[in-house]
Length: 333
Image (tube, rainbow, N blue to C red; front, side, top):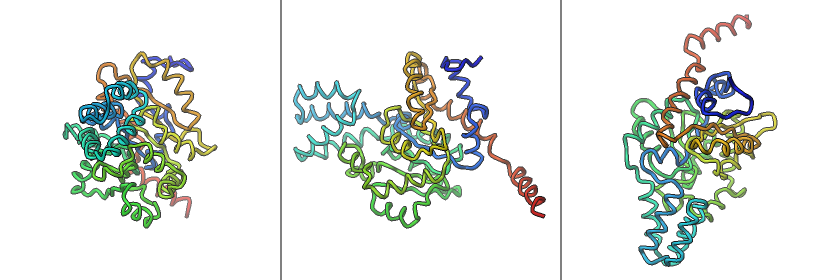
């Protein structure tokens, strides 16, 4: 029985079936081919990339080993890494920059986002692309998503890849009038490892990128608003303020929900998660938890399989499309 306000394990598992009665807007978006995926670090973690806090720890240890940090500085930054990794990464970036040692910083970042298991990377993106989406946006900087897309281009896919940190790609988006939410296109919001100097990692780049003065990014997100589809966050935590804030800004008062956030949690975090659910709904974002006690991040495979199976039922068959056209024709006569 579904008690209002309950969030038991049984209720979580029921929700993860993604039935139409629970998610009518999501099923309608699938029918309209109007879903946008936002792909975060939790996805890249599956094939060996480090999470934010792990990247921060790796940087601190490397800088200490290179005598760029003192023991006291190392101790302080390691304690901060779990709660404020972006701050720690930014401090490490500045320390390296001051010593003309940015090559050390860049090497750690490259190692942090190196793909350790190519097969797992291909498998997770195959599952993601089994769900028809109009576009795939990511704040990850690894090549997993790009490599997958390049591997399927020979089977008739017309997917384009855009890097928001490259002037040439910014011009491409502008020339297309930002009409790039189609064909499952890929949009790297923070750059990728191929242009590591421009990647949005240090806080100064982060603040500049999400400034109201960034007309390119503003135009891009305005297209998300115009679409009025459903966004699915995959591999993000509830602390992803850069994206959450943008979703808040595009939220229409006529729409209660603009995004779902598939969020991994441990069983002991259920009560805390329930409180945060109520908070994030005010932003137009509804978190959907899945328990990772046993499988850890691998559990996302189960979630994606369920989501693909459920939404597949909402995609009209060619016969249904033809029947609908014929029905409309009768009224037109």
